[in-house]
Each structure stands twice: as structure tokens, then as C-alpha cells.
Image (cartoon, rainbow over all chains, first blue to last red; front, side, top):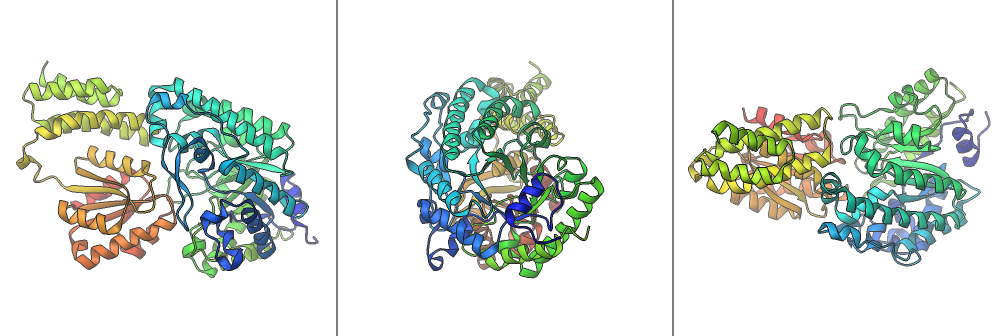
Length: 363
Length: 213
């Protein structure tokens, strides 16, 4: 089979058609800032400047030849604009260090911020630039925090989980506000030309919430946002890097075109790539997983290459057994550590290994 | 109320998420001259053990565990000050802490809860704590097991720094060190010289019990 373009490969994979090789997308986002201005751009500068943000994805595409581009910034964008305190270290992912909710009444004080301003404004503008730079070369996607994740970041996760159980009414009121906030961002993304939205629905995770809790506190809100994503002309994709994801809801019920997930081999019941395929989750959805992200910081080129090779072989065997052509994307399940010491040569090693061992014309 | 009824109330308060009952039955235990250590172990801790087992079996989830833990701590706040210092001398001392640069502490708090339910004296050093402070505090408090946690990759190096300082000060030989958090691995634990790494709080407690046997 002749070599496909990135878009041809991903489009074929989304339709379970034959591909030259498995698509590949290591979730390299913050780390790509190292490609800007000889590595002199700090994390803080990167996520505060739409031009830096988008250009890093463009340079990453040029250097590594990914099959997708997903504009993940970090998970504190919405909390920041809702008023929570966010700590921005020079070279670390920004994170919430001063949650906003200290009593039940605080849930009811949350208001949708002006999405043209603040960090949301940077994210929307940066996403538009990604679409401008990369549409036509790869499938482009925005990245957006799901409402329960955004609320947990804003309120503090521990506080939120306890209040969900003991005082659900104000939590639901806050969820409605956050869902409206998400909805406005979806509309704004819809105007950027970006082709997909990747939702982070982290708390659909059996280590944290059971079926009934998840069904009550995120599913109705997420369902509305998923529908809007599609109605606004974008492809629905979902990311969840938790250990025990609610696959039946997040894959079979939400019906994303692509589902990005992690794998924790030391956690009993954490589903491996082959298990996910064997259980039918890749039948109607491209599953993205899982070369261990820590390898990119602490592993060697050889270790990264071998891990990618093993995953390709596992996936190809499982797809073949299931009678599937191509519904798996070799990815990393979680973001590659955006650390200053992350080894860019390991990203190259992963992409090279997929080109060699992910070929599907030998299956 | 009989001693058995009070102990049952203590346990049930944790199992059934009854904060007021946890406080009132803890006070009732003291009023009835029940040994506070017995009230903790046969009441609150016993109840938390049931909740921990239910969590492991996925009969309950994190929200319920956190609320149960809250009840247990409310009871402990009343009972612990009543324990004669002599009675606490033989309890093993653990510390839980999120290393500097990170404030994600749910995992650390679950470990703290399960260690407490396991009968250990747990001091929580909090989050975003520098390696030097962790080591100084552990030495001062006579901690016998330090549980280090982080959710983020860049801050994993502060686990290593903590181990390095423990070695420099000579205190490493006097305590176990266990690490946890999604980016960590057994290989990383080995690399930095920690004794153990876990992703499951109850497994961590089991490991510690075996290590101390």
C-alpha cells in the first residue's frame, strides 16, 4: 500500500478502513515549547501567548510528523478564569493551588466568565491559530476540560467529592454554570475552524466514581456538550487518563470518534490495549493508547522504540483477531511530561517505530 | 449504653457516614471510661476498615470514603487527646506528605486514612513541602515510615531529593520510605532508593505491616 497522508490515514482509521500503518499521536503539547526560540520559552510564556502555543504545535508537526494535532494547554484554564488561584511555575504545568469553594454557598457564586478574556481567551485564540496553521495537513482538535473536571479544579476535588455525596443540590447548580461555560467555549471553538474537540472526562473512573455517581454528576451535562460539539460541526473525541475508565459510558454511550486512554499495568483490571480491542470498544471508535509517557523523560531511545514496537505488535494482533482494520492510534494515554528534561529524541523514536512496526500491509 | 453499644455506634458512624454520631459516641466512650485506644481500634478504625474493604470491592467509591474518613477524624479528634502518652509509645509512627511543587493531595489523604485505620500514628505534613523540611520533621517526630506522594512528573525529582537528604543525614536507616502517585513506578522507587511504591492505599498498609513484622 502506498504511503498515506496524515489526513488520509486518520480518516481511514476513523472509518475502520485499511491503512498503510497505524496512526500515531504521542500527546506532546507543553513539551513542544522547547522547539520555540531555542528552548528559551518558559511554560508560563507558552500558555499565556496564543502565538507561542499554536506555533509550538506547528513546529512539532514539522519535526515529528504526527497524524493529529490536539491543542491541550493544561487543566487549570477554566478554574483560573472562574477565579481560583493558579500557580504558574517557570517550568511546570500550571495547577490550581487556591480552590475557590470553601463553603456550600460558594458553589452558587460561580459565574460564567467572559471567554474572550483571560486564559480561556488565550486557549480559543491559540486553537484558532492551530487550525489556521495545520488544517489541511493533519486532523486538528481543540482540548477542553469536561464540566466535572473543571468544577473539581475550581472547588478542590476532595471538597467536591464529599459535597457530591452529602449536599448534591449546590453541586448541580455549579455544574449547570460550568456546563454553560463549556458550551460557550464549544461555540467559540466552532468559529475557529478546528475540526474536533477532545473532551477530558477524567472522573468517569471507577477508582473515584461508581456508575450511579457518574450518571448523576457528569453524564447528563457531558451528553449535552457532546451533542453540541457535533451540532457545531466538530468531531467528538474523548480523553481519560484515569486508571479504570467508565468505558461503557464514555465509548459506547458517548460514541466519540476517538477515545484516548491510559493503561496502568500494575493496577488490577486496568485495561490493556489488547483487552480494550478484545472487549469490542474499538469496534466503532478509534482507541488511542498507550506508550508509557514516563519513558519520554526517564527512558532511552531504545526503550521507547521497544515499547512502541511491542504495543504495535499487540495492537495489530488484537485488531486482526477482532476482524478490525485500523481502529487504534498509537499514542501515550497521558500527556508526555512537559518537563524541561523530557527527551525529544524519544518522541522521534516512537514515531519512527510506528512507521516501521505499525505497518498494516503485512497483517 | 453498654461498652459494646458505644463501640458499635463508633463503628457504625463511620460506615454510615454519620458525623454527629461519630462525635457523640466518641464523647460517650470517654464518659463511660472506655479506654480511648480501644474505642479507636474497636470502633472508628474497625468501621473505617469496613469502608476500606467496600472501596476495594467497589461497593462504595471515593466520595463515600472521604465522608467516612471525615467521620473517623471527627471521632479521633475527641479520643486521641485522652490517650495517656505511655499508651502511644509502642505505636508505629508514619508521615504522609506531598512533595514540593505539587498540591494534589487526594491520594496522600487516602493513604493517611488507611494507615490510621491500620492502627498507625499518622502525622500529615501536608502538601508542597520541601525535601529539607520533610526530613527535618521526620527526624524531630521520630517517624518510622515516610509516605511521599506526587501527581506530577516534574516534582518526582523532589522525591529523589528527599531520599538523598535522608541518606546524607543518616536517618534513612531508621525509616521506611514508600512512594505513590500516577507517574511513579516500582522502577523509579528502586532508582531513587525508596523501599516501596504503590497505587493502592490498602496494599500499601499491607506491605508496611509485613515490612514491620
